[in-house]
Amino acid sequence: FDEALQAKHAYWGIVDSEQLSIQNQTLEIALGSPEIDGEADALWLTQPGISLEASETFTPSFQTSWDEENLYLFVTTEGLDGEMIEVFIDPNNGKTETYEGDEQHFTFQNGECAACEGVVYAVSAAETGSRLEAAFPLNEAGAVGEEIGFDLRITSASAPDAPISWNDRSTSQDSDTS
Image 1 (cartoon, one colour):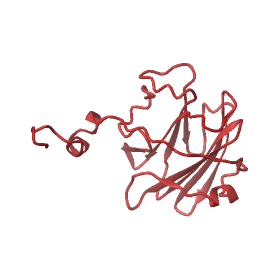
Image 2 (tube, one colour):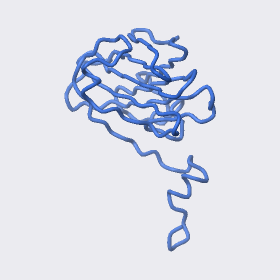
Image 3 (cartoon, helix red, strand yellow):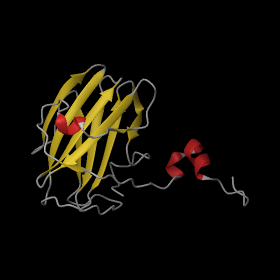
Image 4 (cartoon, helix red, strand yellow):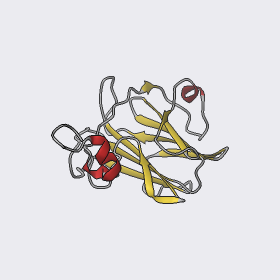
């Protein structure tokens, strides 16, 4: 608590994280077009992975790239069994409180994606988890300096009530793109 006895962010982070405002993260994305095969090729090996906050036994990470036609994603889920990987894309980066017609939500589970029309993807086994590599078509040609909304949420089958997200830790991506 502060001098005026108002709760600080750390308090709400422990007591009720839904009281925290969403801190939109940004990411500089490398230009490049990987081969979509579920394996870490030269493009992925030359850039650092972004780790998601997890546990000592569950260490997911991801990498992104782009070209004029696609947003590329490479996810590694070490220490997971039966994970669900969800990708949220807001092409106009509107950060609206409800979904507009351009927002996209893709769910990958057990190596499949039921609503991934136009998405090219591959899933492969990692040492203690899996890898997902995907190319998501951009609605408009990508350009240097353009920003799109993006989030990634991973849910472990062993902890379905504790999903891990890169950007929106309140897990409200299903209804709110902001």
